[in-house]
Image (cartoon, rainbow, N blue to C red; front, side, top):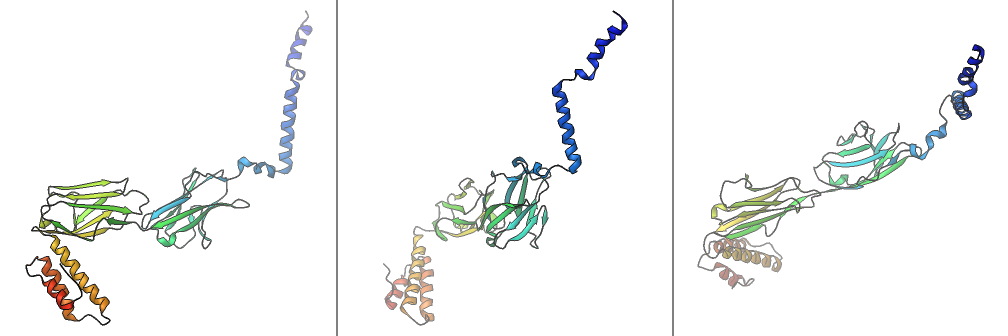
Length: 319
């Protein structure tokens, strides 16, 4: 074989004619596409209008939020495929723009937009919310047309409540058992403290004191075994996120602590009956008799002044 014949097959293998037809077609399509982009100078407008490129809301966020007065309220809005659009928070009742992006557009600096770079979440934070802040807030995206998602905020006043009367009378040697509830608290309190006056009872060194708190049920019990008159005083239940509640406890010596309760009810009865049966202000002597009845009964005196008062006035009857 001559050298010329030997080289001819090599030219066939390395020549353009060996390129497959499908590859030529692919190259041609690519050239045409690039030509179109060069002609128009930009990506065709319809390219970005596909459903997958449009912003949309992630509905996994809670749409109704309850917060307590004084505790920061957070509304979480999640937007997917945001692109270069902006997210705004708007108060529905007056259409007031509160934030755009991370900028605040209101003089009320309690409102703030929180956002982390690269995150899909835009959070409206309201510091120290008040009941007047309750209402609907909209998370709005600057598409054309605009899209929005509403969030309902309820701001409640959480109060503690001690079960029973506001004034308790305990016989000396008996146990004091107080139960406190954190009412209308959207989340369990992180702690519930008991006070006697200004002294914290949860860590009292006095023996026989036990505090049992159940965060899940928002309840706390204060147990004082074998109470003495020294345990008398004002007891306050103070949850971390609720207004406190108080009760006055009287620990009484003697076998008839109910005498003070009976005397109190008798005096109250006397005053109520006098108010209802007389259109004129109560005479000072009658008020004095009622007060004397209460205190003398509380001291468990042997002379029954309440019967004397009842006989004279003929408005209440005591046994």
